[in-house]
Image (tube, rainbow, N blue to C red; front, side, top):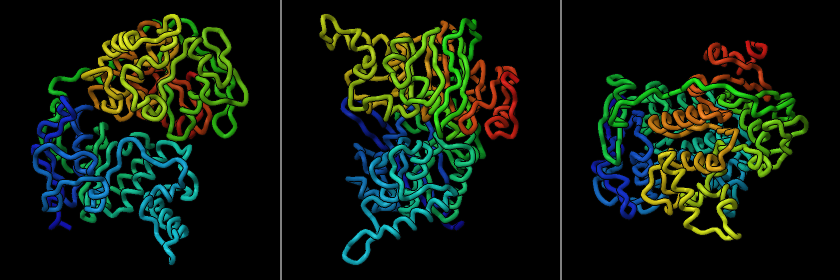
Length: 506
C-alpha cells in the first residue's frame, strides 16, 4: 500500500463556521492521507468537533476548501457523507436503546431476504463477525438499553467499520475503554490503516496519540496551528501549541487537613454487582476508586447516592443513616453526585446553561412559591463564574458548549447545593488537557475547604495524581485500600486484576 501513503483522502483548508455571533472555526485545516492515522488535538472549544461535523455532513461550512478523494464536496446531510465513504464515531454514543445491538449497527441498511423482509440471521452473523474482528464478546440480539458506555462505544466502532469507509474519524473512542479494549481497538485501527484507509483520531490522551498515530494536527481557538510527524514532536511541544501558554501541573494536588468521617459505607451488597463493600471517607480527603471497566465502581457510587438499590448493608453521612434508593434524601443530607455519562444523566442538553446549573436548587430559589428567571440567572451566574464556564450567554442551550464546559456545568449544578460529600464519576472523561488541570485544581481546592470527595476514574494517572487514598475494585469487591505514598501503578493493577489481595492499608 506504499503508493497510497501520500494520497490525500481528506483536505480541509481555511474552513470557517459561525453559529450566530459565535465563530466556532475561523481557519480550520486538516489533511488526512490514505494509509495513515492522523491525530487531531486541541482544547475543548478549539473547533475539533465543528470540523468533524462539517466533514460528517452535520454542518455546512461558511467558507474554505473541503475536498474528499480529490473532489470538491459540500455535503448537505450525514447520509451524503456516509454514502461518499465517511464514517464518524462521536465522543458520546448515539444508540437506539429499544433496538437490538445488531439493529443499531445496521440501522437503515439491514440485509434483506426475498419479499424485502429483514434477514435477521444474516444481520446477527455479520454483527458477530464484526465483534470477533474487534476481539470482544457482545450478544447481537440483546437490546442496547442498559449497556455500559464501553459497550456502546464498541458498537459504534463496529458500525463504522461495517460501512467499509475510506475515511474513519474516531472522536474520543477510548474514553471509557479498559486497557485491553484499547489495545484491541488499536490493533483494528492499524489494520484499517494498512488496508489503505485514512483515519483521524481525536483524543486527549497523549500516550494513545504517540502509540497509535503517524501525524498530528493542532487547532487552537478555531484556527489551524501546526501539523507534525509524531516522530518529530513531543508532548510538551504539542501542549504548548494547544494552549498557547505554559501549562502548570496537570495534577495540582495540595495537601489538605483530614478531618472527621463524613461517609461510612458498611457491608454493601447487590447481587451480580458488588459484594461486602465497606469504606470511609473523611473531611478534606480525596478517595480515588480505581479498577478495570466493568469492575463495579460506578455501580457502587450509584448505590451510595441512592440512584440504585442494594440488597443489604448501610450508608451513613455525617452519622445519619441514608435511606436506600432515595437521591433526594441524599441531597438533603449533603451528598452530591456527578455521574459518568454527563449528557445522558447529568445535563438537560436542550435546556439553558442557567437552568441546568440551578436545576437542583430551584426549590430553594423560589419565593412565596414562585421562581423568577432573574433569581435562577443570578444563582447560575455565580457558579458559572466560580468554575470559569466559557459561554457567551447563560441562556444558550447546554448542547452548544464543548465537553469540558458541559462538565463544568454539571459540577456547578451540584456544588451549588453546598454538599459535604462530592461523588464524581470520571471527572475529566473526554475533556482537554487544559480543562483537566482546571477540574483537578477545583477538586483539590474543595478538599482544602473540608469537602469529602470520592473520585472514580479509568485513568490511573489521574487517580494516583489526585487521591489521598486509593480503593481498588475488582469484580465487585474492594481488593485494596492504599495510602497515597504506597499507591503505585503496579500495586493498583495487581489489586485490579486480583493477582494479589493486599490487606486494607497495605
